Every structure is written in structure tokens, then in C-alpha cells.
Length: 257
Image (cartoon, rainbow, N blue to C red):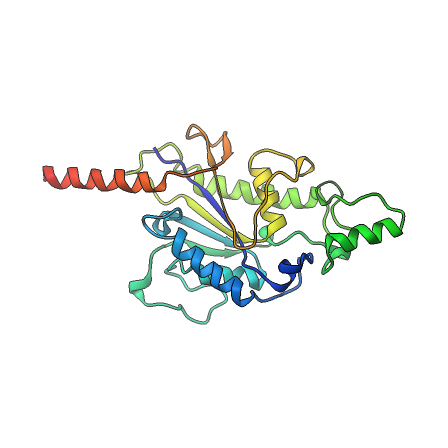
């Protein structure tokens, strides 16, 4: 039976992610090493026999920030549609691997750090100490001049509702041979994707930090018991087993035809 997944990918390394500076609205390119690693991630995890199967993708959400969009480019999913920011598609028909549509959405942009944009946690700690303020916890306090946990929760819950109603609910629990593509991919940023995972699992942001996601990292979210009402974090997938089972079924069909 079909149990759809939501794959989250954090953009590749930037100069600010290297030195721990909070990067929300600031546009920064990936480092050369960041680009190299994302290309390697795409080759390792994307394909018919890999974790992310392009033909199973129903939709792709990407942040408005260029570093996230460049990451999606480097993953080389083979989308039929050109990427929204491209003038033309970057490959021929032979390179098409997915019919998934790409949507740029503010709902998955990075947490707005406000006054803390461009500075490190160490600097924030020192500034608050000098000002006589209590220790800072983004999950409980949000960011002065930026977003609160409640504001982030509102937009993430809206996105999760969109994913479940449009792409997951129509396919979950149905036989695989009857199902349509139901997986989704989100390419975005560290704090917002960690918050997304918490809300997916029904945790408040104030419960955090629960999950970690390194630059260029990939995570998988799904459901237990093929139930839309039982969202879960998938700690390990059996994607190779699925491929073998499909191949065995195809072989049996050929034998009897």
C-alpha cells in the first residue's frame, strides 16, 4: 500500500553557514564546496533505485531565496517544466524524470531573524548579556524585529495542510499499482525545515530544538500505518526493497503473459 513521503533538503553550504551567521533574507551564493556536495547528494539519493524516486514526486516546494533554488538545480531531478527562474529548460526530453510542478513559496522561506540577521549565536549571547537580557532561545522567543514562533507556526501549518490535502490524502493507503505520484520535495533552510519537521510530527516549536539538519542534508517525513492522521519522522527507508519487489512483480507478469 502507498505511504507518501515528504523529503526536506537544506540548501548547500554558504560562507555564512560555515561561520554560523544567521541567514534569513540575505542572498548568498553556495560555496564551491557546497555546490560539489549537493551534486554528490543528487547522484547518491535521486534515481529509480534511490531514496528519492523522481517519477514518484507529485510536487516540489522551494524557498524564494536563491541559495535554495540553486540547490534544487544541482539536484538534477529532470523536471519536465523549466524551473520558474530559468529562461529555458536546462535539458532535453531524454533528461525528463519527473512531471512534478515546482512552486516557489514564502511559506518555506527561512525564519526572519530580524535584528539577528548576519550575526552568530555567540554574538547574540554577548549582546544580550551586556544589555541585561535573559539567554535567547529562538524556539520560544523568536527574533526581535523578525518572526515569532507563532508566526512561523502559522505559515508552516498552512503548508502542511496544503501537502496533505492536495498530494498525500488522495494516494495514502491505496494499492501502489493504482496510486498516482504522491511524494513531495521541499528545498529550503535549516531553522525553517527543523520547525517544519516539528509541526509535521505535531510538536510545538516551544518543544524544540528536537531535530538537526546540516547544510545540504536530507530528511524524510511520512506516516505510520498508512494513516494521514499518524504523521511520523522516517528514520530509515527501505527504498531498495521496494525496487526489488517491483522488479519481481514485473518478472512474474512477463512470465505469465
